[in-house]
Image 1 (cartoon, one colour):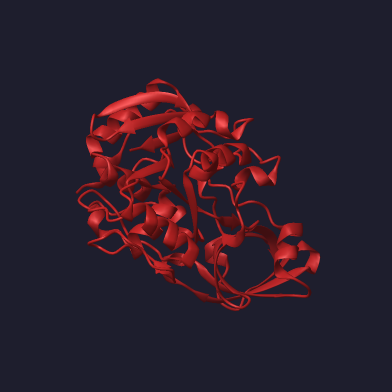
Image 2 (image 1 turned 120 degrees about the vertical axis):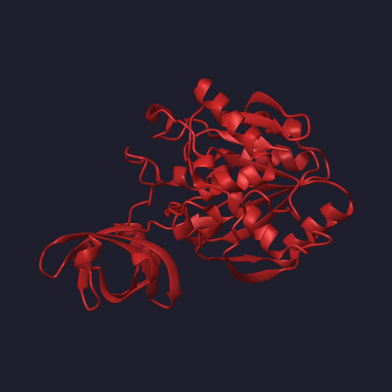
Length: 341
């Protein structure tokens, strides 16, 4: 399957630069896979498409202020984006300018609050970095770090919490699970009152979010791994839903990837698990666990567009994207949402 098959025309002005004022008033496109229908809604009305006994599975990872600006000992400016904690104070990081940051290079951030040494160059050009500091690492990041907004967002973020879901709990992500940004505490309360279960997974979003597909044949692309875990109580909610014949609805592609990584191929049931996943879902994949998916609109030629094209028919997805462009939906991280059922 060719990469070009997952391309579409997107006017730059449709890339959302700032969050909508009220989270749940973004637009919602509802795709019915069986009937091949497209309906236009407001996100808060998603409750009308959820039924008692269904289970929403959301990713409760919390984004860390992982973008750091510092200086080499020579005084040259550098930028780091922390991607993944490897062990202790050692992290995998994107660094700029990469050609100037070789093993042994030392960098100072926040007037010495944080120091770093490049230990190694990893596959793909990222760096293995050792940090040194006094105090608590996350508190230092809160003081000197910035939210690692994607490169297509050029506006500064006035309120840090708008790049977090309202249920974000466990720190470790280099990017937000953006499908969850549309939920408010009030909407989640209404959903639970309707008899819909809410289960959590935790997947810390890593380098896969930043890495474009470059291979002409999409099968040749290699996914990076991301760490996740699911607790017993959440696995039980999901299994109860599957056994009762109700729907498991993934909030976002990250939740989907966790569920499809751990689900039993025959039953779709899941077990409490902590592991890494490098699952790569593209058309031809047979889904084991999820029955519906809430997601944002994804970049052309991206693995996320391939995932949704696997869940719904590729031509149907591209038709929906074309309609979203015509209807001037807002795209990507701060953009509008889609429910595929």
